[in-house]
Length: 375
Image 1: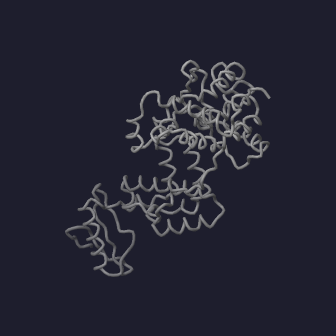
Image 2: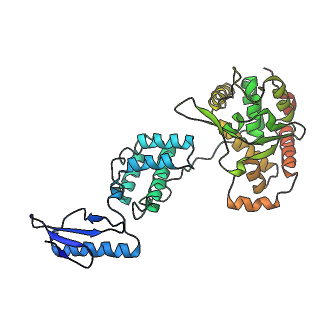
């Protein structure tokens, strides 16, 4: 019969090895995951468990045996802050980039395992952005496991593994903006101008409604972001990622007549941009139209998102401060929020006018005349 100790129990098995067990804080009897060659080894293990329980750092070994794949999908299912688009991305990354880890128990995902997984992933054919996304998701899952006391510490400790250092983005000139705009279908031309001169994202453009345009004030209000899932045809209007994304942007005067013409000739009853059948414009359709237009204009190095980057750069050249840019483009951070304090009313309208001045007196002197909504 096992001899009673102050903490835990040790008994000798018929094999000659020793088994250690103890009563967990939950009141359940738990056994060590392995047997011990000597009784002193079993006693040492129990002493460590007792110390961990006293410090509040004890981890239930049974819970940490849950596999990473099962736990990751449970976290993905139950996290209210994860939207459908990011959930779809994480599910794809589990399938494509984290498959080597899904059958490992949580406690088996060690810093060494994570380092080796990351190195192997980088040697493979996967894109750097997807690998960084997969690492960020794994780190989030393991942080949750730490909070829920499934594991003692997060094994994702690789500096910079979740970051993507993108190359410097190209900047289009005003004349190149016009070249792409004139090469695209007329119903998409205003979208190109809004991206370049107002700094809206593709999803923000697709989410615009007629009511978001105030011709009298010369502004566009961003209230929604059109979100499309990659592996289905589902699309819906969602809120911008941050409160700063909800903003009102002054339209540069040289673009305002084109927006007005678009409202008269191409807008839907409710949506500013619509497809042929009158349904909300899909961002992918706009992207494909842009690709054909840039090829026609000989500007294959310019992406649609580069138009937004161009608008930010041109606004800076027009005299916008960092706080002005953060406000105009819908960026949000603690540092930027402090700088919003010195942005005065009317400053955005001044920036918009300066953008038109830049377009009119730069290398696109004939800009107002060359812009047209008709092919």
